[in-house]
Amino acid sequence: MKLHSRQDSTSIIEREWAPLKEGARWSCIRCGWCCRQPWAVNMTWAEFERTRDDPRFSKLIVDRIEVDQRTGATHPYFVISGACPLFEAGEGLCSVHPDWFYTCATWPFLLMPDGTLMINVRCKGIGTGEVIRADAMRKRILRERERAGMVGSQCDP
Image (cartoon, rainbow, N blue to C red; front, side, top):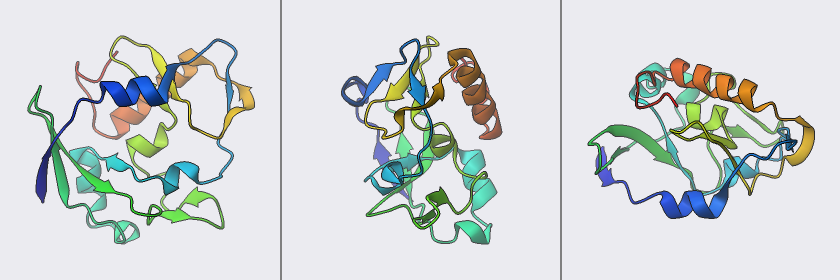
């Protein structure tokens, strides 16, 4: 695997994410927009171990490790070129749902270390569906973090 240093993500967060506003609505409209972006999809080491021998994930090429220069923490990731190989366009779903990665399971939400709930402003599902209950979404994100092996003070808001 190739080692890569993490660049400062502050500008990306400022450009693509906004604090969740009271009364905001969202639902996944299964458009696949998020699965067709040139993302680097982060994985935890627990997710990597869970999926590397699972034939459902055989289409993935996970050959990179990111190193956070501030903390020294590492994690594997894969890069999407065109569309995620796990995306099923006809269904508008991930072929491994609900066993997908934390990054995908919590999209388009981001829970900041101070507890602020952010939403990616580019998601096509914003403005659809029911009102987002912020406390329930925070709990869901924390459950997904636990499932992904992300436990400890550095992950808890």
